[in-house]
Length: 486
Image (cartoon, rainbow, N blue to C red):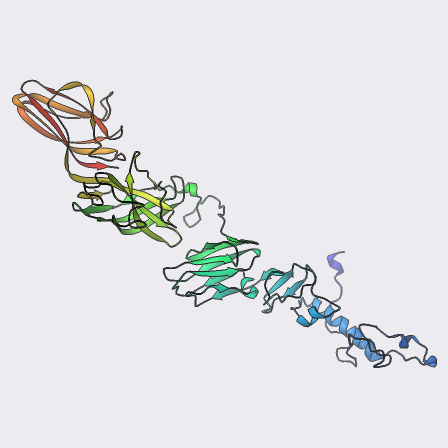
C-alpha cells in the first residue's frame, strides 16, 4: 500500500439526514416481522418470496445499517478515539476490552493501553493494574499537602509531570501505581519534613526540593543516576569527574572557645564537602554551626564522649535530601583523621562531609582546651614540648604527640636556648633526619640565651628532628608549640 492510495474521507454518515431505523442488537424475530438486528442481520422472513408470505427488507433498515457502520468510519477518519464504556464492556457479546486496546482518557488529553483480554476495569478510576498510560498531555497538580499520604488515581498518575505544593507538618508519601514508566516531579512543598514517592507495597525515593525525574519498575519507585556529556559551558550539567574543588576547601573558616568549654561554633563563608575523595561534592555557603560535646548525632559526637586528653576531629556534614548541614565530632585514634568522615556512625541522611579541624580535649571528659581556629591553622596555649640539657650532632627526634594531632602537617612555636656561661649555643630543627629538610635554627655567640620562632612542616607523623650545640657552661634547650595546621 502506498501513501497516494489514501481512500476518500467520509464527511457524513450514510443517510445522516434520511429515513432510517435504529438497528437493535437483539433479534426482532417474533417482534417486528422482517426487521433487521445486529444478531440476525436481515431475518429469514426477508429471504422468503412475498408470494409465500415473505416480507421485503425495509429501506429504512438498509439506511440504518449503513448509517451505523459509516458513523464509526467517519469518526475514525476524523482521528477520533473512543472513551471507556462500562455498558459496552459489560455487554455479553463483548466481554471487556482486549489486550492492546487503546482508549481515550476521560479528560480527552491522553490514551490508555489495555494489558489484559476481557478487560472491564475503568482505566480512569479503576485500580490501575490492567490499563497503563499510552500518552498523556498536561500536568497533575497536587496541592494542600500537610501530613496525610496521597494515593494518586490512575487519571492523576497518567500525567508524566506532577507538581506538589503545601506546607508539610509531617512526612508525607505520594503513592503511585505499579507501572513501568518515568515521571517528572516538581516538589514545591515547604516545611522541615520529607515527601517520599513510592508504590503502595514497594520502596520509594525521598524527593528533593525542585524538579527531578523518578522511575517506576513495576514494583518500586527509583531515581537512577543519569549520564550526561561533559559540560562545555557554565550553564550545563557537569560530570562528577569535572568537579575540581578540593574536599575540605574553606573560605574564612573560624572557631574559638575558652578552656573547659563543652561547645564550639564554626563559621565559614564557604566550605566544600564530599561523599568521598572522588565522590559527589557540595558547596556550602554562610556556614554557622555549633558542636555540643554533651550530645550525639548531628551537632554532637558521632558516638560516646570526647576522651580526656585526646584529639577531637570536627567534621562539617551535609544531608542533601533535606539540604541541612551540621557539625560532627569524633575522636582521632590510632590513625590520622581523614579528609572525609570514615567512621561508622554518620547520622542518618547525611552523606557528605569534610574535616574542618582537630582540636585538643582537656583533662576532663567532654571539655575542650582553649583553642582558636583560622583556616587550617589551630592556635593553642603554649605547650612546653621538649626540654634538654644535652647536646647532639646526630639528628634526633622530638615527639609531638602531646602537642599536635596525627593529622597535623605543620607545627609552629618558639625555641629557647641558654647556657650558664657566655658561649656559642644553638639549636636547629628539621622536618627529617637525613637531609635537614626545612632547616630552621636559633643560635647566638658570646651570650647566655636566645629565643626564636619556628614554623616547620611535619613529614613524619607527630615528629620533627633537632641537632644542638653549646661551647661552654651548662646548656638548656626547650621547644614550645603554640599552633599547628592540618
